[in-house]
Image (cartoon, rainbow, N blue to C red; front, top):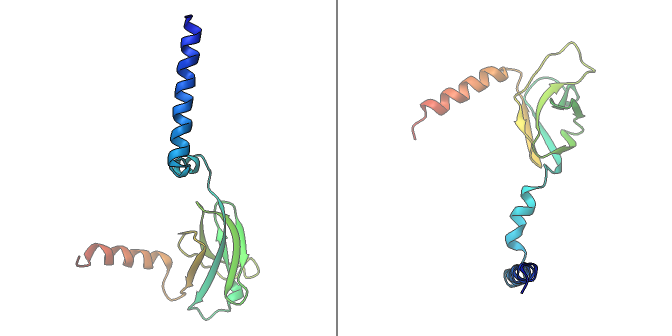
Length: 138
């Protein structure tokens, strides 16, 4: 027998073995492999505003800092379509340049709530959260 026939037979046996395993076990084992090659998906993000400030809701917008995408609140809700690996923060609408507010950056999820608290700065809140985490009893 020639070497090429032996190689062809071996490739055929390996191919049949792989096909048999795929048919026997199913394609569920390969779903993780398929997901590994996918990029971040676009998701619908609904952000609810918890406004603790003495300002109207329309003063605030949701801002995705990396792309600059902004979404206004309507009835306390802002809706966006973003990649699942993005983050958003609360910011002031361009219609109110006399105000300044910058909230913490938060990773996106399908349902979120952002809090507008004008009594404490976001930096001060982050410091208190870090101190609380560090010194809280476990």
